[in-house]
Image (tube, rainbow, N blue to C red; front, side):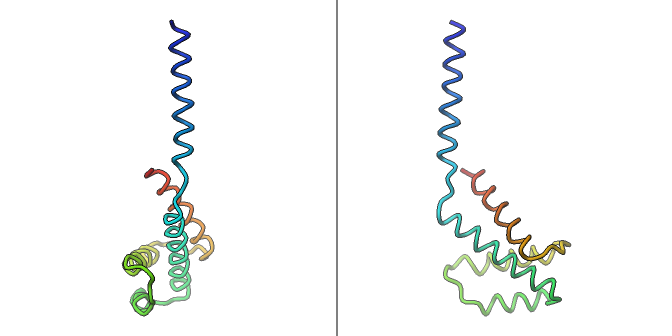
Amino acid sequence: MRNVKITLLALALASGAAAAAQGKALREGDRYMCSWGAGTAARAQELKLAGVSLYAARQKIQRYKFDKSWMRMMAMGITEQTYDSPSRLKPAAVRSSFYEECVRYKLARK
């Protein structure tokens, strides 16, 4: 009886792990949002390192044409968070860090 319980437990854990691995695929829309946000964070970091004020960065965002309605407010939030951070990382490092954290967040939500 004990061997049966152990076998059933092992099978349940194995099937649960397989189902979790299949469910962890990132949707194309999530991938796009993470990539877009990473680019926005990198541009904000470029402006910050160039000495552009937050006010001027906000004005630049207001002039952009965005494809989706959520993008303008998201770009404002990402820019403000970037400016609030004491980080002096290069924009490429900010881009990769943002993307990795976004993907990790999206996968954790599934």
